[in-house]
Image (cartoon, rainbow, N blue to C red; front, side, top):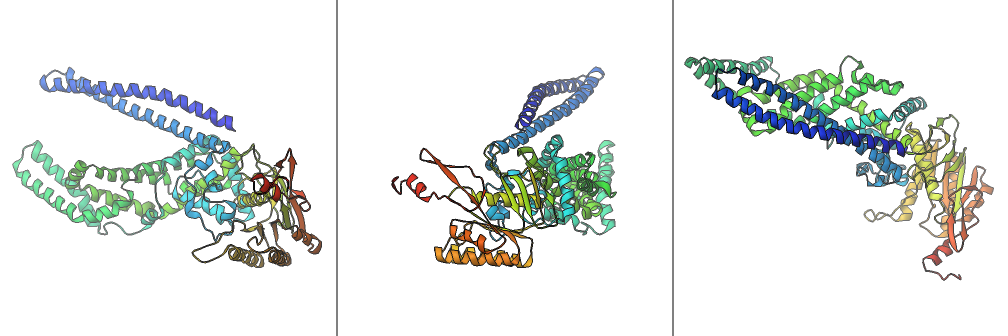
Length: 597
């Protein structure tokens, strides 16, 4: 996989270097042509009657225009090549383990009250979101976070999503091109507010007569002024001046309203052009899966073309952006009522396309989200798409944590069939990581994504965890009370949903050993009676005796071994309770105890 991205980087570096050389030549050519054009123009003015000079000026002007177009095209190819280099470099960073350097961590989606997100590192720093995220639009980020945190797809929907994500992951060229196009459309802030203004049916000017006046009055003014200037008709000067004064008054009176109406699209011309490009790319793609074809249909199959809509919107936004030039702003408005014309066109655009915009943005957001999940197939050594069954189980072979590098990852088996697993083991042996491994892959499976395993089969599980529990000084909540609240949440979920899968790390660590053992036994007994599946890690080997008392409790453990006085872990889970401890050895390692203890 890494070789593929390195080869792509080399190819794009060659393309960039080649086009930069041609771009430099085109830049020099533009300068030379401009000097020649000025020279020809000078001789055209100073030596009238000679047809050679105006002809040369015209030819040089046309050649210069072609040079400008060629230069812009070459610069576009350079930008594209450099953008593709950055995209492929980010894939290599994922493979090499440097992905925690990515700046977008989905911080706004952090919620300590969520069922599992904080415990399983789904969003936030060093999270699944940070690792897989390739979204560049507001709707894409929202869709990806929703799929990670609140996915509620049926088995049929998951099957369709798996087909689409598989198809995307198998087409690296299209994935890279789509990501590049989406990146060009990236804008800061929440676009949903702007989209709501698109949907607002209120016209800028409700009077059709007034719209016609504002549209055609500048044309009348230009005609009258043109006659006055070109044919030197003095009788036309006064009407022309009066019309210019009227237009200036109209512009000044309505400037606040037009500024407010056009505020949302003032600086987004390039973004709308990029949306036009990405939608065109999506519609032109030869998709096979139903979900991707549905997105194509949403963008243009209903008779209302999103490509055409964004092409028109980009043109309007480009006209609006010209207001940023002070000279043009104070020239175009009195002369052409420019702001009114832009507002009237934008109003007409909203009337034609506004009701469909949100659906288009959401469709693109769904596509971006599926592209994120497709990333896993392109950076993880062994992945599969899990099967879903009606019976309550979670079974996987060679299950690994996707956030652990390919070379460092240790895989384990998973066999959960209406059972509660008590997982014992010494410090740092891998108990908590195993819980997170199972949890993260369940989250991926429920989103229709590939999982980090050789094979996996599970039912529609409702995941609830109690792992990373902390006190809250602001609310006066101790660690133990915070854990009690999480355990209560697990019990409530188990009562409502028999498909609950719970995970509890070091149950009741915040209290004394007697109360911890009694409380843990009570909780496990209640969860067993409710018939849900789950896993509990513990240091209390006495808790493992519950396998003799509760029918569906099974013991598993992690262990360590010692060589030359050093501790070693294999991070492999075994049947049965733990038979080793390492607390004294670790205390001696850091100098708390003497080595002879």
